[in-house]
Amino acid sequence: MTTRVLIVDDQSLVRAGFRMILESEPEIEVVGEAADGLTAVLAARETQPDVILMDVRMPNVDGLEATRRLLDGKDEGPRILILTTFDLDEYVYEALRAGASGFLLKDTPPEQLVEAIRVVAGGDALLSPAVTRRVISEFVRRPPAVRPTAPGLEDLTARELEILRLIARGLSNAEIASEAFVSETTVKTHVARILMKLRLRDRVQAVVFAYEHGIVQAGDAPA
Image (cartoon, rainbow, N blue to C red):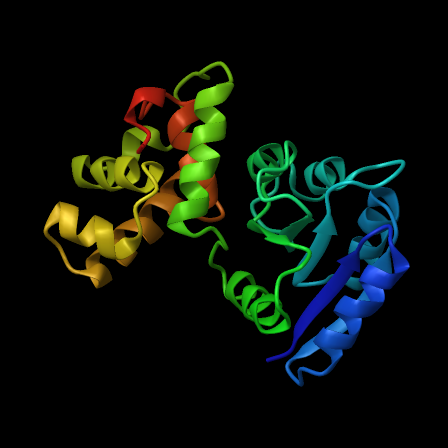
């Protein structure tokens, strides 16, 4: 199955570099490029990519706003990988809240770039436990106001709520399995059910959801 990719960056050399890497992969098709967020939104609607490599800092409409426009209020949409030169870019957390599936540093090695696209195209989030912990740290630094209980939350079983809390702490599936005394396969099943019931795209959204709705508190974040 071919993965359709849209490259969005205001630097033509960066776009050309990514295109060269991706076009060497037989299962990846570059369907277009865009130099700013507004063009990206229009290009995405026209080309229907599976994955968008989205630079976060661009003129006119930045990557954060473009991500919001593409995903806000939608259960389905392209998987968006945020590109940044800083692993703790101030916009990264907001982009994840807006629905991005993860982020990559612009100097990521070619093989990791290709693997990242495969991961998010397959429906998973590109957010390692270490990165999840950094996102949590950012939340702790400036937590948004907790919103009312979301629809679907009451549908979670006690076990699923426990798993959600462990996800929010930044634990991997293996770590959750050890903590909850279940198999990794069982953890994956619980995670899938949690995402379905809460209508979330991936575990990145689950982390943000858990903190924003008071399921876990800032003091629960791992050191």
